[in-house]
Every structure is written in structure tokens, then in C-alpha cells.
Length: 240
Image (cartoon, rainbow, N blue to C red):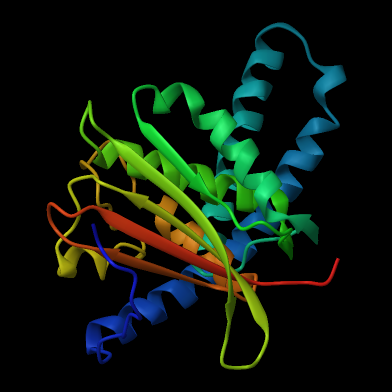
């Protein structure tokens, strides 16, 4: 099994600078488009009670299209690290328990091991997006594991950072197929997917990493072919 160790970022390349510029552009454009789609959807909702028959059906199709536009721009904003977060103090172990409970059906036959710290970990972030992040990582781990003999380990621990502030460390480890270093290095790039094309669109890990970064934390991926994957998340701890 992989041992956790400190990851070092490779030197930046011209391709990385181009990608950063593209992400920045996506964030700016998505913000403007979100304002447009939100205004369109809001005004359309005022007409709902005035229409009937074919007109109502057409209206509902237009409203659905506007909502899809809002959803898409939300994903683009997440790519650019500009998600709208509803922050409050939450206990991370409670969110982990909820996410695992929601994923329980897909984990049938998996040896699930939890090793949570014996203290409350209070973090200041968006509970729904933290739930979604944990669920996404668990889902990815399950997809990488064999049909039988899968093992998933969820761990938390207190970790001190260089600035002297304590952080909560959450690690999600699997014994799946793993990834080559060039693949894991790109795992959080926009539209890059570690799964099969057409099945995974490349939104998930990028959104997870962007959310964690917006919350003042970091996400690291350690993997090797045939040795599984460890995804580690750190978030600043708050006083209760």
C-alpha cells in the first residue's frame, strides 16, 4: 500500500500557464453568463401562471434550458475556483458519516475501514460542497477498485502546518488500479478525466480541488499503477 509522503509540484510549463489563462477566462465568462441565465430564468418564472397548453410546454422547455445554463456556468465557476460557498462551522466527522451512508449501496462488498480521530474537527466551510467532495472521492475510489476484494480506508488526523495553525487531515485510500504519475499529475485539470471517456466528463476532481482551495485547504493525490490511490485533504481547524 502507498505510504503517505509530501508531494512536490513539478516546474511550471508553458502549457500550465496557458491552462491557467484559460481557467481565468472561463471564470470571467461564466460569471457574466450566470448573471444572464439567472435573469432569464427569474423573468420566465413570472410568466408560468399566464400560459397553458402548447405555450406552457414550450415555456417549460425554455426554462429548463436556462436552468441547464445556470448549472453549466456553476461548474465553470467551480473550475475557476469561484464557487459560491455558504460557509459555517461544521463538524467534519458528521459530514463524513453522512457521505458514507449515502454511498453505502455502491460500497456493497467493499471492505470499508474508518479510522477517525477521537476528537471533534470543526472546519469553516460549505457543508453541502464538503459532502459532495467526499462522495465524489468515494465514488471515484469505488470505480477504480476490483468488483470483489475492494478496500477503502477513510482516516482523519490533526496536522500542524507551517503557519502554526492546526488542520484537519482527511485521507481516502483505495486498493484500486492506481494511476501513472503523468495521469495523477493532471487529475485536477479542467476536462481531464481519469475514467473512461464518455462516462466521466472531467468536472469532479477539478471542482473538489477548487472547493478545498477556496476553503483555505489543499488536496493532494498520490497514486501508482497497481498500488491504489490516496487522496489527502487538509482544511484549517476552527475553535468550537
